Amino acid sequence: MTPRQIILWSSAYLIELVAVIYFTRATVRRVLGALVGGAAAALFGMGAIALSETIGWWRLPFAWPPLILVLLYLGLAISLTPIYLVIWRLSRRFGWRGPAVFIGIVAVIGPPRDYLIAALFPQWIVFAPGVAPILAVSAAYVGMVAVGHVMMRRVAGPARGDQLARRRPEAEITKPSSEEFEQHIAMWRHYNTLRQGKNTGFLSANSILVAIAGLLVKESKTSPLVELISAVALVVCVSWFLLLTRNSAYIDYHRKAAGAGKKLWTPADAGPIPSKWLDRIPSLAFSLLWIGILIFKRSGLI
Image 1 (cartoon, helix red, strand yellow):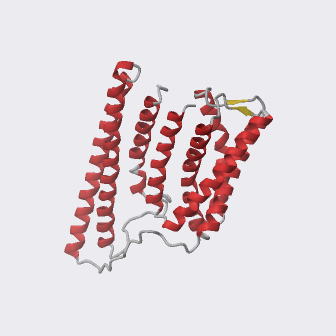
Image 2 (tube, rainbow, N blue to C red):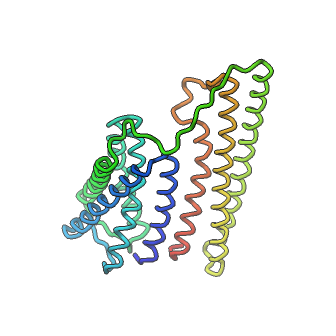
Image 3 (tube, rainbow, N blue to C red):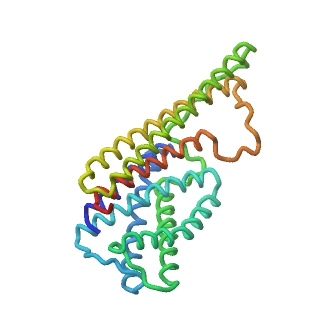
């Protein structure tokens, strides 16, 4: 693992951190608490890595000069910080059950994630055979999540009753007349049609760009062109996400206005995740894809 590779994936996690701060609407105090949690958990993680390598559960086949150690620590702290903001929102909504379920999920998916990385990049980490390394990885993930969450709580306080950074003012909405009701329904349908058209257009554009990048990615001479396509596609995905966000705001407004402050026609079995968030998943997925292509191309891994 080279300093350039560490800086690249740390930059990707930094972008993720900024996005999580925005979407969780965390206050400055909560963000500082999460950063302290990330710093403490990174120390725990570095200790777990060194201890497990000494025992022989895994091996990192590269030198550990001071620069690599510092970059690894900073990258690990940055990558862990968003987790604690997510746990904060889960705690705020579900109480102790939120972090408990989250830690259980991390304990399960942590080992497959690291073993996949080891299979793809054997120059980064090599695991010893047996069950012990799997259990060690799982315990390390649980420990990092738990330590970071405790430190964030000590700095920023408990999640329940915590304020959000951006509070949306609720405008007083009166019952519409029959004519206004019809107008709001018509505008609701109009923006819903626009949303479907935007999804279709942006999905088609990204599919075409993926096909072009796939044809060029193996050619060394076309590396700058692949990076340019990835950067342009990332801008397209961000625009896609922002346009859907704006479109959803208009849809929500007209639904509430037509229902005198209450959203109309939401079935009880619609599920816990609103459609406005489900609609944005493709844009986020393509954004991660293009970020990954940029990182792997710049680091020479593809």
